[in-house]
Image 1 (cartoon, helix red, strand yellow):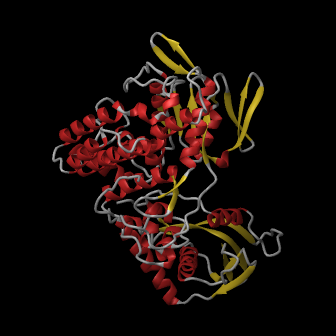
Image 2 (image 1 turned 135 degrees about the vertical axis):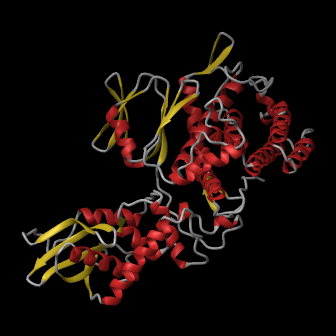
Length: 529
């Protein structure tokens, strides 16, 4: 049991929704417009007209030893009768200045803490920053009793060892900042009936692919230079992830700033092989991650089957779109059915290999007939790539693998503890598992697109010792095409709402988490049409 005091803010979240409090307790962090506004308001606290004085205080740490809670006052003012507590709240403009039960509980806990510390409390109030109005709140014994009860219920919740069920058909979910990670309706694995507003930040994965470039931080921006010439200046607030290729250098200050902001950094070779990644040490869902390792050791055949069923299905669809009468389509559909009935992990792997052999025997048919002379296809070959098409596949698969790593890390899962691929050779097994269903609709589709649209030419590759490598120009073009693909919105095959491919990858990562923590009964892969 953790003896650390419970944050007052966590109790307030519990009053709003127990599952949201659970997510906060296990380290799930989100950004939203209202949270950002609240953070800004707490930094720029209104002081009864703006002038600080000796009797006014801000950001005061408080604690109740008996109740085991702690927190921080937004503002406090000393009077002859005692301390007046002020809490700042941001609300949407069209909302009324309503003091909710959670707000009353928060004020009661703050007042109880101050009284336990030996101070008299003369009053409490809420200052609604959006309306710039103050509302006095009179507390009674019932408020204190409810506050103590809420503390005990919150303590029981975070020590329970399992997540509470999501709310059902609740208006609170509609604009909840945690809706995108809670996925309350998605856990049922059927079409979502309500339009839940999930913020779509303008952040993106930033790629540094210029050999010899150096990146550092200055005034909240990432500056990229080469030979003293500035190549780029990117606000750190817009970076979702940073991906490095070849001999591009990062300053220690930039790496530290990215870790503070929970922005993962992935390092790759110039040819696209992933070397590793760096993440903050304070990730969410630590206990669930331990459970993931246990499940990985025991095996979860249902997960392994679903990864491969979705993969084979999507390969069939990609072939069918290019050639509706392709001769291997009936065989692929048959193998897809066989995987669904497989009862051994080895059988799943064997059927996956058979399907991959059939699919890649026809991969050249994805290329337009007039392009096939310049882009001949022989067979799928592992690194080092012996031809241009295999070089492109290797590179786009690394891009996809990096996104799968970021998605898994964002929800606290270990990319190494998988259920289909083996972890024996220290591969990111779960990330490789997750990417299986996305290989055809994302990576293979990007290769098909850049060739068929004439975005790259076969002459843009270098040859050395029977291996083929992309030039810097080809690499950057493929990265741009890949990012366009990841930003493309689709109708989610299961939930029927619009989501980008990158968001869909993260949703599937959270579906794995939901299956492992028991909040959903099964995992279902993405199947395109």
